Image (cartoon, rainbow, N blue to C red; front, side):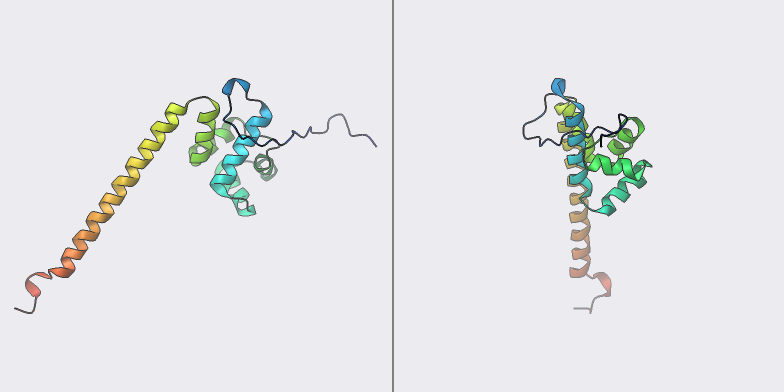
Length: 141
């Protein structure tokens, strides 16, 4: 029995070891890179697929194909993924050869994290001072 001529062509799965050269990027490389980013960001569970479906409003079968690297997202779905996933954003920037933007993004993320940590440390110090010095309501010593 032969396959119908309109049957989907399954793209070969290729493990990417070296960084991609954007000028040599093929559709299988694109699909695999996006799949790797999705797995890294969301995990390998069915809940991960459901999460991506909810965030992109894509068909569940399409999202399963993205996770298995049979196809990659296009258009609106890729934009939705970039909007909600740092890993996919970095993968797209890496594939487009924009490593400078990846560095800028990481620096901005690090700065925000550091500011949150400093705020938390300051709040904890203020709480500690309140515990040590209860103020005028002390026992009068």
